[in-house]
Image (cartoon, rainbow, N blue to C red; front, side, top):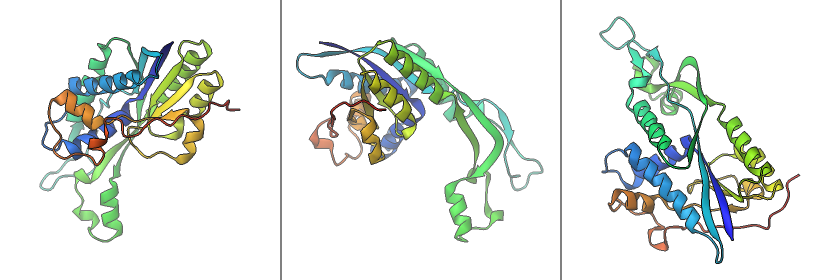
Length: 266
């Protein structure tokens, strides 16, 4: 039996989890390139497709990647540096993280059966204190005049991404374009989309990339399965990790799929 599978990827979540594993297990390796990042995502998808029951064949319908383009504005830093008379200007489009993020999006555009779903970046022209700086102030470990520009971050948020995901799930499910959806995400924003998919008979699987999820989410999915990104990084980078996860010798898929009897959500 042929099973058509669509993958829906929360790009921001995927990159955060990938960086978490990179910092923890590949500390001495240089920053991942855009090409390596896309290879890791593609291999994770391939492992999902290869995990099919006897007598069935899973093939890729399309990968929908949800993200927003990096911030490309200029802004003044919140504080005047010591010895200077004016606040410095930062060009976010020239920041290393923004350049890297754009390279990833450009690389994804070249991939077969990948579709970018880009929202927009909204900002309120506000700098906010980092959690660590705020805690230091509250605990009287530092005084406000000891803060530097490094203790602030420019507040931005994505807009339109959740709507695009919901529209795609609705189209895929109601037009019977696929048999299964694998969502790579880590929050509960997907629940309405999952309900719609399951009502229309779609097998809905969540891959939270080994991130802890709210136990109540299990009732809205047909399975939870996470492949080991560290072993995938090993295959892509051709290099052993600096330190190995506790599950390293248990196989590449320590979180086995737990399928529930499918039921309709009302």
